[in-house]
Structures are given as C-alpha cells and as structure tokens.
Length: 118
Image (cartoon, rainbow, N blue to C red; front, side, top):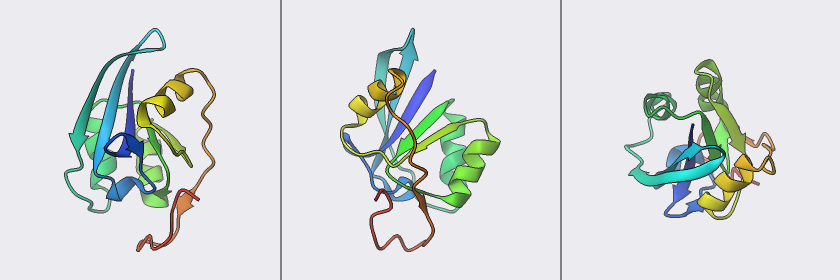
C-alpha cells in the first residue's frame, strides 16, 4: 500500500494542489518500509489526482482539498483524508493506526485565500 501526504517539506500542507511536495510512504504489514519525496509537478485542475493515481497511491492525506480533486480521487478508488495538520510521517502512522479521520475540509474557493485545512 502507498500513502501520499501533500506537504511543505515534512509538514502536511494546508491545500493539496499548492503543496511543495508529496511525501510517499510505502507500507507493508501496517508499517512504513520506504519513503520518498516527490516535487509537485504543478497545479492544473484535474492533473494532480491523476498524477498521484499513476504513482500507485491508495490514500492521500492533506490539510484541505478542492471538491474536483476529491471527486477524481474517489473515481480512482483512492481514499481521501483531509483536515490534517502536523508532521507528514506522523500523519501517515496515525492513519495506519486507525487514529486519523477525515474532517471533510473541502475548499470551495479556488483562490484559497484562507487556510483550507481549517
């Protein structure tokens, strides 16, 4: 299983599409066995969810995310966990422990002037 965390270096970002990088965690037996950071290749509507899908990701974690991205992830069978803050690896470990739940923090303004994760 692979978990992607939309991040600013090692911290969960406030908004998925404008993150600096994605921390990708490979999981076996509910333990992280490998991690890598992949730079955000650029924000274009509909592009990033398909990019993440092509990486073989099963779960995406972020502070906030637009409804269009959530819909594409859902269509691809990728679980969306939003409303998350803090350290990316700890967020992934919390998800694996069953302690991380999505708050449903959907961004409704494309300008994202506020913090989507709030």
